[in-house]
Image (cartoon, rainbow, N blue to C red; front, top):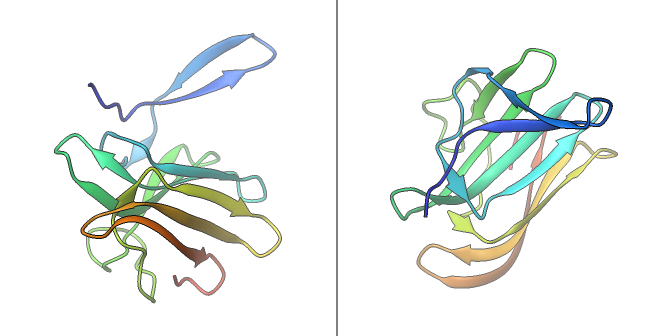
Length: 132
């Protein structure tokens, strides 16, 4: 099927979906990814998923609502505007993700991990420490 890399939000006042055209480097088209919203910093986080080439991914991005732009948080330290320390979770799809506003962490759990099959591992990206 077709994978998309577009971004929309639902306007409750106007009762309509609105397409967003952000700047920055958007994540490649994907599905079965994990996402979470950081309401303190107005950031929408996206991790991993399955891309249009049939590969699992382990990239981390966020959409900055205030700046209207995507930022790539590059797990390998290359190609992004941010390079965290630590070891990023393996490339995966069909996993769960959640934003922890108290500790400023994006959690990733389980999924179908490239090369190993189903997993029940747990990881987090710590925004303050800037590391996995």
